[in-house]
Amino acid sequence: YEFVTNLLVQFLCSICLDVFTEPVSIPCGHNFCKACISGYWDTSDLCQCPMCKETFYRRPELRINTFISEMVAQFRKHNPVENLEDRRCKKHERLLELFCRTDQTCLCVLCLKTDHKTHDTVPLEEEYGERKAQLEKTEAEVQQMIQERLKKVQEIKHSVDLSKREAEREISDSVQRVECSS
Image 1 (cartoon, rainbow, N blue to C red):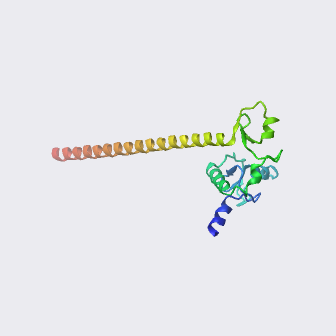
Image 2: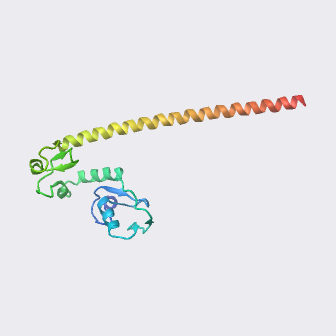
């Protein structure tokens, strides 16, 4: 129980005290919801970490921390009742069941009939499946690239070792020739 509680704390934004939405890491290593840290910096003269107070002289570019984002998604998946509010349309209070590819957002059926009538929409599960497959494909490609690079590094190390041995042999031969001629 204590482990789960400690794990849960890792997924909480220290500004809104809720589970991360669009988690971002700032240069000091602390994590926040993208909207929370942006809002915090918008209302402050300094771009400073709310946790450790480190000051950034230029406003850092915020990028989603995909690792934390995936962990939060897994957490939410295993705690669906707790996150039911996140799965409801803020405008119509209906369950979000569709994905608008045009606007890259989740929709309820009423959103589809009103604001997104002419947009490219699909069931949420379909979009999730396609994105998951794409991520898995990309991960496999990255892993393959890593393996190829590691192999190349080993080849270069081997080549360097051979060159080093060859150079040492040539030096040794030269020393022997000099000693013989003396």
